[in-house]
Amino acid sequence: MSYYHLYNYTVQKFYRLLEQKDLKNWMKLWARDAKNIFPYSNCLMPDILEGVDAIQQFWSSAPQMYARLSFPVSDIYTKPYKAIAFFESHHLVKDHPHRYEDCNIGVFEFNNRGKIKCYTEYFDPINLGQTHQFIHISKLS
Image (cartoon, one colour):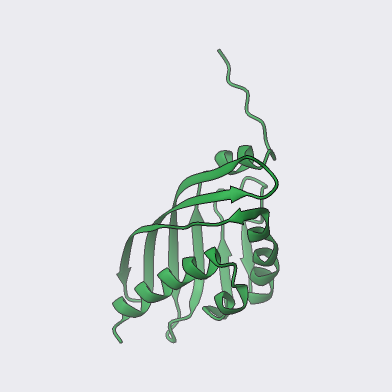
């Protein structure tokens, strides 16, 4: 299988397993020494998770905040050892009438066995914070 097909398959499976909240199989996509980076976390979550144990600990609780997750992927670009995914988030927040809607970019780096060695997710931290009522923004007139 070419890297193009392998990375496309892995990226699509990554988001599909998250939608299904199947963390057991989702964790199999990661290398043991993987990193998960959130450059714009804004104190809403760690900036970086290092190693599969930290990644699993964080992601075992994060999806539980939602009654339903949806990650439609619009584009995937690949090159050796890398992939970039443009995707949306359409999530129904658990126990709230709120929906989390966002456009995101996921940057994947793979090791020589096709496992995710680094995943960097770019999202709007203000939108996430307001949706979950972690932050409140007042507009100045």
